[in-house]
Image (tube, rainbow over all chains, first blue to last red; front, side):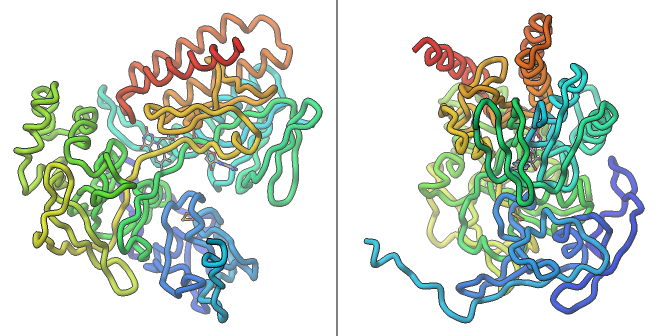
Length: 112
Length: 401
Ligand SMILES: Cc1cc2nc3c(=O)[nH]c(=O)nc-3n(C[C@H](O)[C@H](O)[C@H](O)COP(=O)(O)OP(=O)(O)OC[C@H]3O[C@@H](n4cnc5c(N)ncnc54)[C@H](O)[C@@H]3O)c2cc1C
Ligand code: FES
């Protein structure tokens, strides 16, 4: 939890909230109940949420408010969930998507 | 069937909900975020009278008031589609659909992305993302940040990061490209910075805004703009340098900056590295109007308002029956303007729902929007008033057809 802002000169001390346990890529972490998955992971120092389906490069949040879909993860088996919009719950199992086994076919040349 | 559905629980949607409830209308508010308040949540700045505008508090006050008045909220609920059928609107979410006679779109704004080589590395985020992490979730976006893009919003957020004890090592421009265009030209940026000068205790900028009233002086200002940059709140702002690349193996490790000339072109051989563990990209805001487009609204393009906005009246009506707009979907402005617009939209909806005697209140509320605009602390485009006038003229024009 090294990345938490505990004290703030204007906003004051961080609100006490219930700490819960969740899993991300088979590792256990702790976060505040109802905060976003993205915030909980970043507070634990985790920036990489998935690897790109085609080229396998690492990706994290970009907009943090649901617009860009860069933060998509699988939550309790449901794919394509936005980590920045989804509230954390006790026992959640979160997994990164990765590079797909077959390449995505490039149709462009046929369309030209 | 609901009487009124509001999409978006930002400042405009919340104020509209309160207003409709006060008039006794049945209201359902849908929002995809987990907390009500929209982009007001992350806002934090000191006002001219020395008090702080605390977006978290302001959001909470309005949300609780709306709840007390009996507004129904569904948070964590993205709206995917809206369709008009037989004099009512159907609103589709992932799991359910809802209908109402009156539908208000209060979906706010989105940030314009600015592609920079290396921008998909984890640790690169929009400047608004850093604001939300810091002020709403109380998680540091990183320890040492670089901000690409110098504008009203990024300057305000740089100060907010600083306030939370996060180091901002540099604010620079993006490299000149077709996409970035004006935002990568020192002169244009200098121009726009003149409008944030009151927020910055920097002598240079304050002095600058007095001196650079005409184009000649502005040109001089850029030519003489020190290569080492100026500092606002101890954050070095470099209008003579641009980030040409963000580097790092699996996460951001830093940026490569280069000196640029007054037109924004890179001076070869001037590249140097700055270490950082996060990078914010600030490309400005545009109205989030997809649902209005899906519905088939008429649109109007206005640079002053931030892009395409649904054509609408002063009373917040669109050209489609029962469809209204309020807040940043009608043009990029601060939260106080959005609140005033929400009130007008709420009253207009009540009027169309058959509640008599609201005409005077509607007129007064329209004047309040004007007042909020005139007193606005943050102005995203200096020509916003002009933009609104042109839009209204276009509305009247098309109505006449
Ligand atoms: C990232 C960002 C940072 C900003 N920071 C500042 C700042 O520091 N100072 C300032 O003065 N202004 C800032 N603004 C401008 C801001 O838009 C206004 O101040 C104000 O919040 C606008 O209010 P609104 O009600 O129009 O929309 P918003 O506050 O944006 O609220 C819109 C709401 O609609 C919801 N929504 C959108 N689409 C859907 C959908 N399809 N389904 C369900 N819900 C949806 C969103 O989740 C959001 O809660 C910022 C804007 C952005 C985008
Ligand atoms: S970070 Fe953009 S949608 Fe989640």
